[in-house]
Image 1 (cartoon, rainbow, N blue to C red):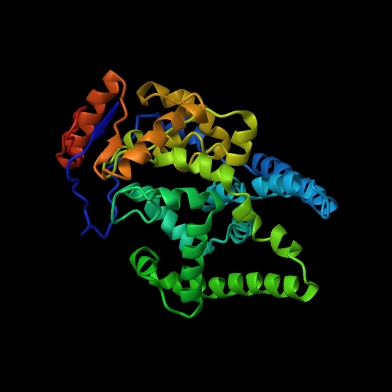
Image 2 (image 1 turned 45 degrees about the vertical axis):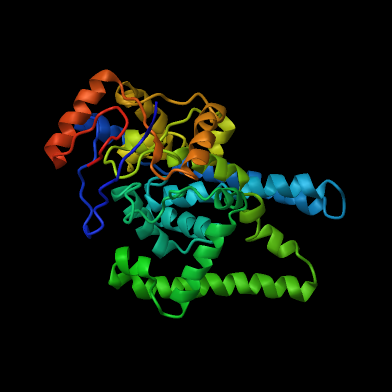
Length: 361
């Protein structure tokens, strides 16, 4: 179902996130089992990814000077850009039970992804506590009215890369950005400043290396692979929230779950189960399919694949580029609608109805 929403109440004055989100009831023991972390599944996944990255990198290097270089680097960049999904999951601390393993792979994925880790950890925390709450969530991928040019440029990760380098440069100079002042604790600022300097030093060293040997090769392997290989991750990430409701405290209405094949799930770290991830963000990537089976009875329709999702997303974004009030209204199971209304009334006094002109709490 699609609808146009009226003016949304945005909680712009809120400084402390409220945990008043809808969550389905799961017995404590069952949820604890779903949240169980270990090391070997994380090692298996990261190990396979690094092996694929090394293999595709070897093919790309061997193909230099031939027409095979284009598809070889395209493959390498696509696999490389899976670092975004891995950075994200390590930020939650769930791929590994051992903390230093999470932190090690978080650092690796962050620097490959050109996202400074301290700043982004707190940014992503805010994204989860205030998902698609305008003025509070710093990670809204498509703001209204939709800027279609920016959406297309993001297939090369250009706008986000420019924004992230702006943040790192200011932080390297010891000047916290407005966003950092909002959600990064002051006790973390010095660490954020020093890591920004380390990241920029490493990227500068790669540029110097390329200039010294008069070759683009070092930069094509790191970090530019995140740009030319980011197309697939952009497809994945657009399915998360694009075109859906703003300012509603129910992830079932502002988030999608999309079925994907095994290769895509591997590259995306099972983040296609995105409603489930937002409902219970401490459930590890490998348990998300089980969580999906457990809660799908109270979830809206699960998209059968990227094609079905984008048949909804593309028209919605085109309409949002002209009408900032337009959004896709997700249909909930009938028994879940009753549960939602009860929850919203208890938590915030708001009312949710399925129809045009919906007001969200």
